[in-house]
Amino acid sequence: MAIRISEAIQSLKPNAECSVDNDVVTWLDSEQTEPTQAEINAEIIVLQAAYDALEYSRLRKAKYDLLNQDEMRYDDVKN
Image (tube, rainbow, N blue to C red):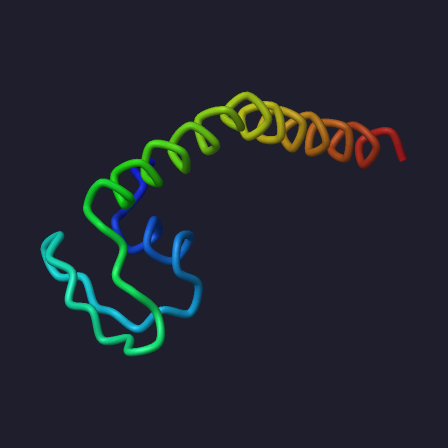
């Protein structure tokens, strides 16, 4: 999964009012300052690294879910 600009902005400036259309940011928030493109790019890298670091646990969860289904099916056959 690729991190989107809107996710990076939300991470940098929670509750900010803005719109993103075709990677063009329109800043609507008068309370918070708009992040620079460099800040957004850096945040995308950080968020992507965090997402990628959890790939193993996502894969393991999928495998464990399959095992659980097999166990339940075996229990149903046995009982």
